[in-house]
Image (cartoon, rainbow, N blue to C red; front, top):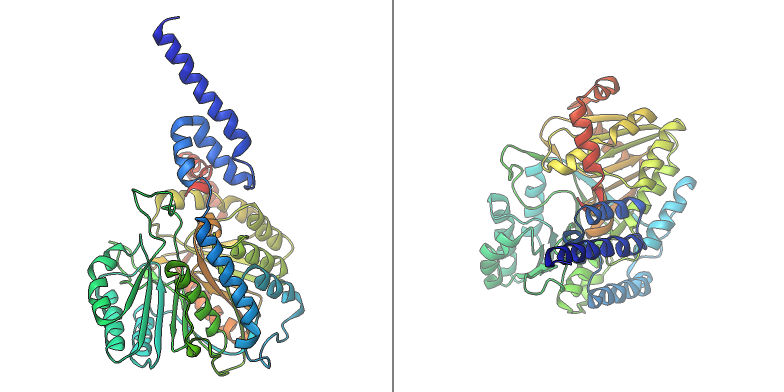
Length: 475
């Protein structure tokens, strides 16, 4: 046998060995959709696919981080009854949603609390104004955790507010994602640190130590806590609304007061502890805020540090519990089979289901994959709206007139499995009614998707969308 033939057969043997071994290994503890995407890549390009899979194939955090997360969860669950006023814990909720309340507590670390007030902020610059004003009024501490912290006017406004707060003796801690906020770490970090602001890089990754943190595991949360009394949670980052050329982002933020703020505080300090291994013992950090209203609320943190895909399981449970109306608003919609089936089943059993997504796309492959699901949804009777006034980046869901979720989580596999996310559940008809007003405004600024026109779209678009969908687990 010639050297060329020997090399050819050796190469083929290696390729088929990789294919067969990975055919057995990849599907373990993985959904069929996720396994399918990886196996397609490996079967087309076995060696390249194996290399990529070795880096990105499993959403595993380093063992030390998992241990710190588990330790923090045990601490929170053990101390929760000491932190929260027992008179407002475990209030009554509509019967059909009792299982969702229990599920959220089982998936995360927190039970349901009463005594809260929730204000919905949909004006982009206005929400930044409120945050800066609250930082300027802070007396004890300011805790910020954001995925993107820009170096533009918005980023500098908030960093300047932190510097002012630190200069008058307020403890300021800023956690920002190492990848998405790397420019702010480099350009704004030195001045903030010099003023006494603690700036912490979240999930740092290194080309020279790629085993330390996977590059695609990110902390996508957006949380602010001021003095343990005021909290912010939602979809908005600390950056200008037009930070991407030709695109203006529309967001929704919940400003909350009351006992549930302590759950946001605990989520922030857990992330802080995981990054720094510093344990905060200041007694003022975990003093339960006074009741400020009668809203029932509950925080659900999720991410690869938790044993289950909490945000996915929660939304599936809520969709199954819906009796009359569901409105889903998300910029990225790539559901797994359980969520897709739950939405279809809800529509088929007579629930009015609305999906509001952005017509403007900032990620081409994600947009193509997302659109591949529209046929099945329209066929089941789901009404789809394409928002036209910019990129609708808000992430919220309303179920009937009783429950709303607002937070950082998209309805895609990345948010379900790879990103650290935060969701605020609100069980209050008045807050849900406010959210309905915002949702109606978004629908009015949208183009309803006509089923017949959609079915008549060019063949090449259908092929491109369905092809992108095959790699939904990799997007």
